[in-house]
Length: 119
Image 1 (cartoon, rainbow, N blue to C red):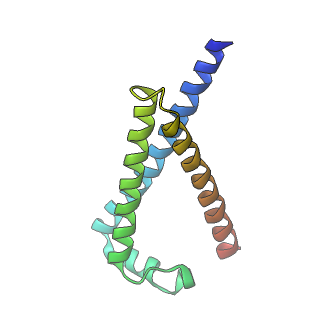
Image 2 (image 1 turned 135 degrees about the vertical axis):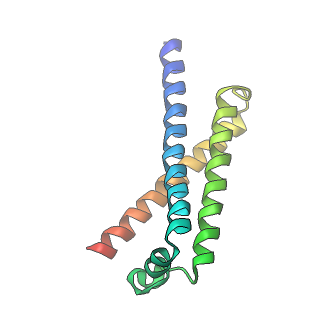
């Protein structure tokens, strides 16, 4: 039984890392896209297409993306520390669970907004 729990623990944390890396790559892709073609990003993200959810300026979009990148990096580091050095720290485990709940809520809200924006 203990071996199954360890496998589940390890698998769940690897899934956390993979999910955060996918988000991180998406954010980095947007930063690269802004560097290559800032006019398109400015028209889409600050224009009328997004309505009330648009950004005030391209700079605000960049700052938002860099903030999201730093949050992803910190999350990945915390999960790695949880897997290696700080396994016994229950506060870190609970903090990561709370962050997981916020991520799920945020993704649900984002999907809801996209559904009603496009639908």
